[in-house]
Length: 392
Image 1 (tube, rainbow, N blue to C red):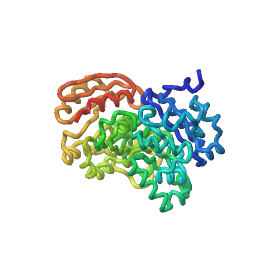
Image 2: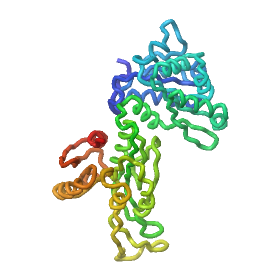
Image 3: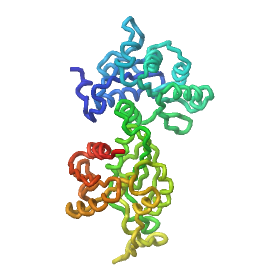
Image 4: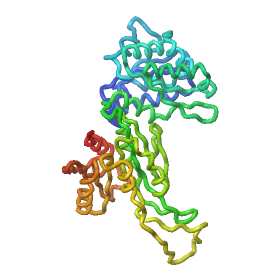
């Protein structure tokens, strides 16, 4: 067994049975292709590697053979690898990572003069999804001809995973963003055309100029919902408070700190089909003090007022039928009673216990249309279940 088989399914089975062609061109970022290849396999993919001749001067084909378990295609042979490996029925997606300005322009102009461009143009011609991941100096990226050619690729149906602009460099997108776009391409896109807003994380209320009042929410569940909705084809926005988890780069995000900050944003909610309110928002807001409270005060007392309820403001703006509310309680009997009452109003209610905050595994109760479903599992699996139950 090749060592690449040992890592298969380490992350998930989302790419199980999927055949991915990974095309590497001669950007200095091509070293990332090794790690991307391994990550695709960890999600279950079979990976065939294509390399331009100039890419082999930066990373050796032997390295990519180790990464994928298959000999890379550097030069087309009588086996017609661009046809036998890249057309529909033989391939589920083509990823060009990294993609240079030169290769972008060749593809846009229909030039098939090496293994990479031949693979990509064959895929486009047979309607196989093509994901292009540019990486270059910013001056190349902003060249008029290159910009027009990128737009041309979009017109041809290619997905462009935008680079991270840092100074004068258009750096390759992060690995997670590329992987999520691959999964999005090959999964059932049952949420395509839907606009979904997910509000997650913890609010933080100012006590003084230094301190805040917050809670233990990690934002894990919100991120799993973001991932699930994105992978299933939705347009997703993520509004988040304080997070212990990395905020995904592959969806548009907006940050808030306090409940009042979030309330100022909700006029922008009107165009979403569904709004998930899984943020852990403060129920009480302290009256903030100017400056820094001295650290040697004994018996400090805070004046707290009741926070405005976001869910009530949302109901005024978008109505109840688009809201998926989350309810957390310490005791199961209290949770079920309150969530059941809420489910008479909202599209769906998801209940969980406060003991699950920050953990990877939890138990939830889904209340919808008078029914209740109880399930314990990892949060990624539970997010999939919630979206399955979402309905139209």
